[in-house]
Length: 92
Picture 1 (tube, rainbow, N blue to C red):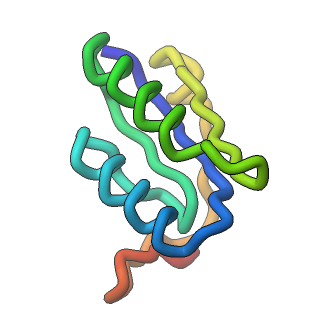
Picture 2 (cartoon, rainbow, N blue to C red; picture 1 turned 180 degrees about the horizontal axis):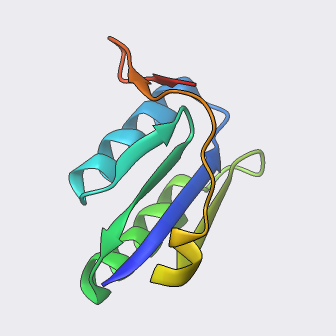
């Protein structure tokens, strides 16, 4: 299992919502409006890469996928308070 962080900027609202739904469906959790994280096995990681290729089809879109080892993840720092709001948007 590998920890991933996915950060994206998708121009189209509907497409951005569909991407968020797909990321949740493979087991990732939202940590900010356009950022997800979670642990994936090798098959789910391949699925993630395919999803990202599909959704980053417009020249204005970009998706970053970072893979982190346990040590790197343990050194992260988060500031603020996590709150889930009605429209599946997290506000810090």
